[in-house]
Image 1: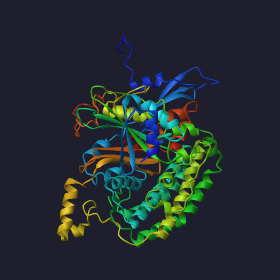
Image 2 (image 1 turned 90 degrees about the vertical axis):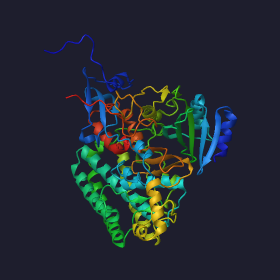
Image 3 (image 1 turned 180 degrees about the vertical axis):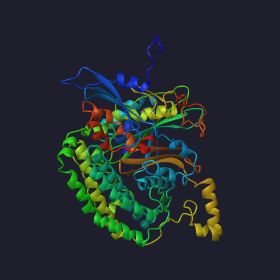
Image 4 (image 1 turned 135 degrees about the vertical axis):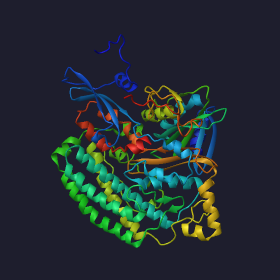
Length: 160
Length: 418
């Protein structure tokens, strides 16, 4: 467990850190949705943390009535060679989460992918288009209520 | 007669995104006509089905928008609907230039979730196949970069070497291309002495063949002129944009997961990590060439050190048993039935495991709810993250540099599109 980092974060932003978990020597921190940008900026800029590399960002669908969607941030420190996972939750009724593109410019495409697959809207991402699916597509394929077989006629085919 | 529109026809979102982009590119001698061209998805220099919408001023790229998804097969959705073992063949189709690397990366993530330790022989074999896959991938990258900018012979020569590698893979795994070689807790079949000798023969003759390819490129005036100083990525931008692998190391960041977070038996092997500071296409080429030499040395050492012993972990409830034992032994029959029908029995939790793939950091993030199939599986594909920087690299360059920059980034669309 990255005790030092967790304690430092807790001291700096006592209300932002909801929970810290460890599994297979990997630390996962649950962060309040509103505070994710300041927490990310702190973790990047603080010399003791130094999580300067956003390795990955992805969405997930827990398929629960509350806190259905997760956004997972996979941070890496090039100096201390450690990984840290941050997690925020959002409800189906409010799909807006803050974008971290102001902290890492490279978050743009992974956020577009999460939008494409789950419909999570990242406020502050300047180019939030679909990443893989056609732009006319209405559904979000990685949600658990989207069938594996797809939905017939949901993808418009080219006219002859 | 053509229909007359009272309103302008609706623009596609991609075109809109291109026109909305802010750009800082400045031109001393602009031609007065701006042009938008569409490159790909069916273009030989885009290495697959990458589509680029490029706004040109004369011959200079003002801005560009890459468009992905022409090879999107929804592997993350498929993974949620098949067991951990069933997903292994799908990983072949991610980065189809180095399938053995993907096989290894995926099973390492699953083994981390299941807490299975593979025997040392299997770990050495995995190192050997990873490095052979890296050589195979970098050979294609170097050859195709040469092909894109006019050095056709290199492509032929690197493909001759890749052909020898495919013969090795066929002997080792039974398939040339879609290998599906690894299993959870081991590998599908042990490496025979004949295959070991094939690998040894390949490795022995390879440095000389690579030097021939280098002779064609390193002091080739056209090749150097078209890559030197083209597509420069600064160290800060490379980190911020999530560059990884050879591209990151060409921008002066000394980061190699084999070194910084060792997995398998990499900490017992001696190798250098080539780092260049220029950040241009030529530096990315040099990193790849030198990595192939390091990979050759790693395979040499691994072949020398490889121990005898089993290649499957003794975890009957998690590792698929041998077929002949399934037919003759009761216990194995039961385990085989349970693993095939209900999958392995993982704990609830989430893991991420990354390997230093041939294109960069190849990671698998698995969320498990204790079922036989993953609840969520995210593929951290290096090509996807590397391609993101393309508009930044292309801005203000000539149209002919586009192919040199794409070739030096070395994207594989099977992986970027998932």
